[in-house]
Image (cartoon, rainbow, N blue to C red; front, side, top):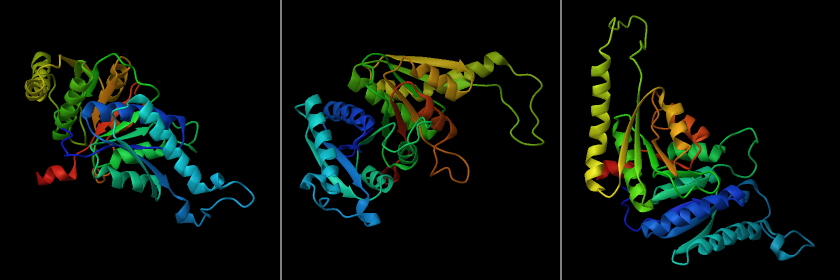
Length: 298
């Protein structure tokens, strides 16, 4: 799935503990994928006229740019602690974090972020940068919470859409890289009216409805199972709303994967309601897979 030849795994850092969690996860991803690791720190101060040199009367290390370079150096050193084999580089990029990370996503195999950065509001479950970048990035985004568990399956949400199929492919790839199994989760509810004047049948054939949902789930998984025969797969058909079901499944997962599409007038820019809810409440790291622009050009 992540077939951009030579593309790195990119991790955004800001000096926070959450960013170092992301660095550790990104290093493992880069090592498993045999890809380089690129560590990026967005340096916003030039945009707002803040002096970049050392503070008068203080050592040269006090300069804001020097401090930002220390953030990069710390992250690169942490990556090398995790894997001596990883080809890691770091760069200070002038600009605001979200535009910088979105530009990085155009040439990345995977973008890795911590769930919370510096300066966030304590009551927010996930930092605004993680939410906005996940909604608009041009590559899969892995949002890391703490130190991921080493056991458990990869869990993926399946809804039958084209983007869901891409998410399933990414999940199979991750399960293969991690040497674990995959749980494909598809939820269903009784059809409900979506607008005034909708006429629904008086009754449904429950068995037929379940068979139809089982068939949709099996068809989505089948092709990927053939491509990754080493990955054991469990198909879960659950009656309920998708977001709470996936959040519950994430408790035992080492990774949860969802498609990131939105619907409505701004569907191309926003996270869907399910992916947004799971991003805020998942109990495992979460990968959000969006449709890539380069997929439209072969």
